[in-house]
Amino acid sequence: METLPSLSQAVNSTRYFQIGSRFKKERSDHSFRYHLNNFTRAYRSWMVPYVKSRVHANEFHPVLCFLYTDLNCNLDCHYCYSKGRKIPGMTLQTAKDAVDWLCCSKGCKVLAYMGGEPLVRKSFILEITRYAVERGMFVYLPTNGTLLDEKFIDAIGEAGVATVNLAVDAMDGYTGIPKNLNRIRGPFEYLVRREKRYGYITFFNINITRNNIDDVRQLTQIAHDYGIATDYHINEQPPIDYAAFDPEKDCGWITGRDIERVDGLIDWLIEKNRSGYTMVNSVEHLAAMKLFIRNRLPAWPCRAGDLSMIMRLDGSFAPCFELYGDSEDWGSIYAGAKFDVEKLAERKQGCSPHCLSTCNFQVTHYTRSLRHTLQWVAKHAYTRFFGVS
Ligand SMILES: C[S@@+](CC[C@H](N)C(=O)[O-])C[C@H]1O[C@@H](n2cnc3c(N)ncnc32)[C@H](O)[C@@H]1O
Ligand code: SF4
Ligand code: SF4
Image 1 (cartoon, helix red, strand yellow):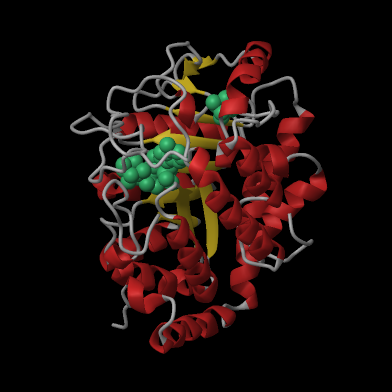
Image 2: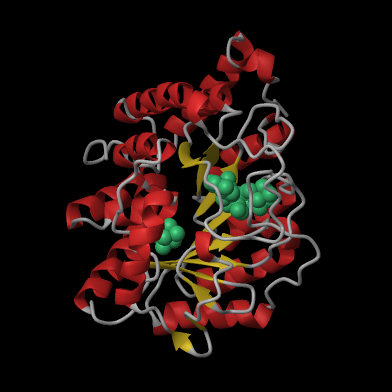
């Protein structure tokens, strides 16, 4: 099997571009049916539930739910406060009850796994994916990719996963940044190759820290050459205390002297977004990163606890990833949702200037108008539909 070259070879070597072009050619061969299926699936899972949630605007109808299946992780990204070791994962019954509650009682059709690393329990993920897909859900799998293998890729493709979000921050990895492309190049290439057969979409999910600025450019270019999308986070400090998080380590926070270099990267990403590189992030979100790193982000209308939510390992709820460890009672699968919209709005005045949640910022952006929502749906089929967002 052909593999990606190492970091030093990757950007300049002819061989890399040959491999890239081969994949580009394969991707351009993706049939009209592949794009149409992705459009239809996204339309049914995002657009229809969103319109229904607006029709019943006084009731709680989330469009997207993150399901924490495990907090355990086999890696140690220094910036991450969402990981643990030897913590009992969600039970199969809780996960099935979660799917039933979301899908049957709330009309929510987008199920995104979250952790920790979901693939520390592959058979669990396969079983819940089959269960959710049978109930018409759009299943999104984020993973650090290190536990992926060909057998699992075929099994999850067969199970009907809609998107695989491969988290890579670097080409070769650094201390504190273990997620790197060269470590997983075999499974990555297999994953892209099998897109056509199973119909899922692949993304690179990249966290921008002060230590991986050049890598972000290289990964963006590689994603484009392979015909896959990218999704960026800006490295954020935890808003509340997390026991497993060690602030003494180098977490790559962006501080005063890094701002100029990060600005340069963001300008470059905006230019690439405008030129048609497929990115989950809107141009507005990328631009807001510049304000965020200067601590000058104004409060923004986050929709966590309204259009999006998370479910913890025990089936209890919270509005967002950032507030996983918060002690407020927001309900559970068994007690129902207790998101108080007014209380949350007040709280967001305080937290949103210090948070640039990629997921929730896009939810806000793409639910601004029906045109924006349609643009989001269309991105699942082809990036340049309805122009740059
Ligand atoms: C917590 S991980 C869980 C799923 C999987 N293990 C992974 O790495 O994608 C989900 C995402 O959160 C992002 N993330 C974790 N800590 C972060 C932080 N401090 N700031 C911004 N993004 C962060 C990661 O980069 C990753 O893309
Ligand atoms: S970001 Fe993902 S891979 Fe890295 S430590 Fe956190 S959960 Fe693990
Ligand atoms: S702004 Fe939204 S996503 Fe960020 S911490 Fe507040 S509620 Fe959570």
